[in-house]
Image 1 (cartoon, helix red, strand yellow):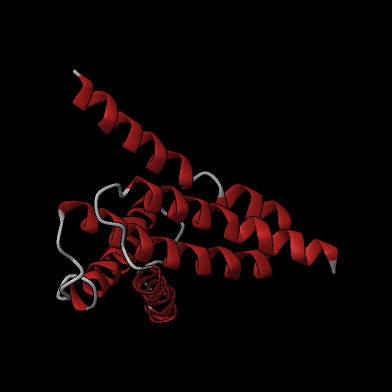
Image 2 (image 1 turned 120 degrees about the horizontal axis):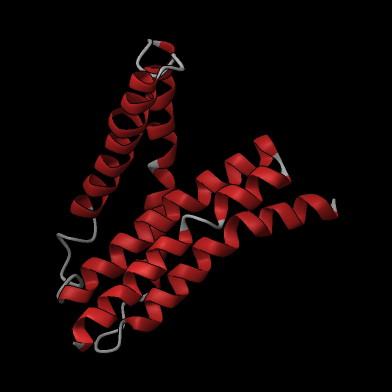
Length: 159
């Protein structure tokens, strides 16, 4: 029981930490926590259809082989295209067309909420399917490039 709780926490903490960090970065007009929660939940909701599309593509031969070409198609066409297109459609469908989406930072905040909702549910699904070691390796590393890119942007503005 304790191990399951720890694995669950390990799966959700990185996404929640990034959401909190980005929420704190919005200095001028803080977004409503309700709208952020709805957007996060929307990111979670799009996870299931995307995983179904990826499974269909895998079973239909788009991502079934272990050759370099098949791995490339699977990674950059099947997985990346479906996941990023779903996130784009989610942000354009809900927060972008609402009156509370009214400043440049809102694009970053709401895109991160959708992405972290998606990533958090994906982490939880992987955690319960593959266990502790996979969760440790899978849930934390994707967070690092996002934070590094943010700090790269700050550094670039300074000079």
